[in-house]
Length: 249
Image (cartoon, rainbow, N blue to C red; front, side):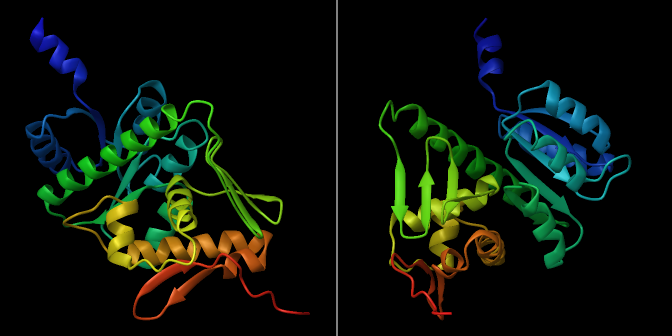
């Protein structure tokens, strides 16, 4: 009975890759780290499993038959917010941007270190659990951040720029919320990677740059002033200006 209870308490992951060798390698390391593993060899099977079951995280290959990883993530995000780590053989910026656009939380380039995968998985799950716990423990207290041109309602995870809704991926939202919680404070990319992504040992700093770029682009569609609130401080990092300078027309 004790063994059954422990099994139920294990975090459940879905490993999706068309290469059996990679699935076996990931299963070996992740099961050793005490995760329960399901597998899928193509995108179609992966999407069906992800919609039918509750996973703590999905490791999702980009290049696959039936449906590629981008399509799977895009369809899944219509129904669920399950954390997604993209696995890709390509390191191009376009690959990363596509993944982040459809709601991926992270990506890692093949060939990868299995140990790094385990650490990243643990970091994402820890962050997700922490965010859920904070929201559940907030009770009836509203968590709203307001600045000129920009507002965040954390209860509904809704962002508005000049009164217009801005649709963000979960990670874009987390980054904006972190910056907006301490306006005018400069954060280095390493600090953002550590605090927003919860990476203590591994992490590509370009992940931060890509998210900032996408965040600005989405804000700009609704408000150019709001987009300019996220400022690059050369040699140091990024900050969110509480009172941006509005350009006169």
